[in-house]
Image (cartoon, rainbow, N blue to C red; front, side, top):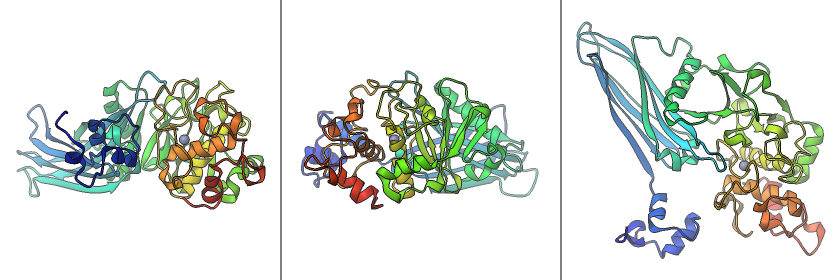
Length: 429
Ligand SMILES: [Zn+2]
């Protein structure tokens, strides 16, 4: 793209390429093309609905997604001949999720649905049924780089009671997963938006005694913010019987208070032994205000566990993963959380991060707390907690300092301590 210059892409307000680069947090090697890519704000998927076998039914569906997570789902069905139809459509935008250190990408499907009756010439009534719904799903913003390269899929049913009177959630999920299988990917995350969410009766498949986890079609899903995030068990096929959940114990609260002070809503926190894509732990807000902290193999003894979700230990300081995930719980409690399908700052072993540190690194102390991303904040806190005892190579920036280095410890005060004192413990997001 030799003819493309900084000003023609970003306008005359762009003082220099370097300023723009710095403002969007792209590493120094960014090309003009990479920079322009970041400024794509909207993607539109648009397709006619064509039926086969001479069925007198047609239509159109269109999905618009913006990088801030806003979406719009529009379309119509039309009866084109004698018969009338009850029609239901499932539209998905599918995209893959590359996971560092995992050979096969995972997949996600953003699911939309609409249904209605169109009348043929056999009876009175509208020949057309139209829909137009809008909303916001935070995961779409978090997953924008994948979403914008997604592909449109659809599943159309007519003259069947597809959703059922109360919402056949198992059948619905099976259809979404089937559409996702076109990627050949391991696991499908499902973001359910608009009417599709209303059509589901997730109460049907909630596991007894386990909050915020549903089980359908042989897979477990954590009920995140308008999304079903697949949950896995390390080293085993997931079954309902293997999923364990519990409240946080008093000695674990005391452990957490050493970092967070009294700012965590312990009564809302549930620990589980599930992990997300790539056997990575993750934390997600669930129904009724519950905060699901999914720790994998760190579930039994989170304050002494030194792994990253799997069987291998000695990869981080004891309790470091727990502190990292609790930072996400803090973000959820303070409404500064961006949902993810797995914890990007937590690799299953050292070395799997490759050369790409951009989403994990956070640079020198100084910028405002709110200018750091969800995972960067998690890393700042867990590495402040771990100090030089953290064996993970990504902890270079706080390595010279003692664990929990603070005002009381003298001259070597860790410059990142300000975020613990002025943001975490002060509840300033
Ligand atoms: Zn994280």
